[in-house]
Image (cartoon, rainbow over all chains, first blue to last red; front, side, top):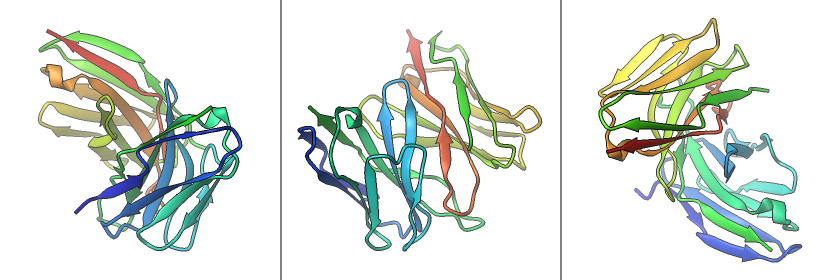
Length: 115
Length: 113
């Protein structure tokens, strides 16, 4: 099992450019998440998908959109990148059935720089 | 929404000593409290978690305590080793409906020889 995979690993964008970060999981989890991590700020939730077909805003959704393509895949799109979006982006997945582990499994991260 | 505060932001201990990291949360409905460890350049990984129906949980050198009344929980690492050096994050959330978590800002633990 690969767990949670993310592409790309690194990306440099110019202000105003757009891009999509891809995430896939092979653990048959229902829930998926996108976080950003900035120095001293911890992990902040951007968007999440509790189950296939649903998406909800997290703590810092402005400037981002998401798509839950199917149960395995959850993408994050930056329509017009800004320097304030320079960060490390983590995708995660988990399940929530009673008796199941609630652990969130993280992908390796995407380091994004916007100049 | 939920707010999680974590202290201290940095912690330096001698090898073999104990380390304690404390977190407080604001939403009394939260019922799930995990702790993640993140080594430099790596992804966060769960080290221990506790649910609100339990006051304490232990796994070898790591233990977590929860005080629901005071809305705080703590991570205790005993007999620290150099490989314990990392950033530790606490989180709080409500199981079901997506298992959304709110994370603390992290504690940089350094174990010195």
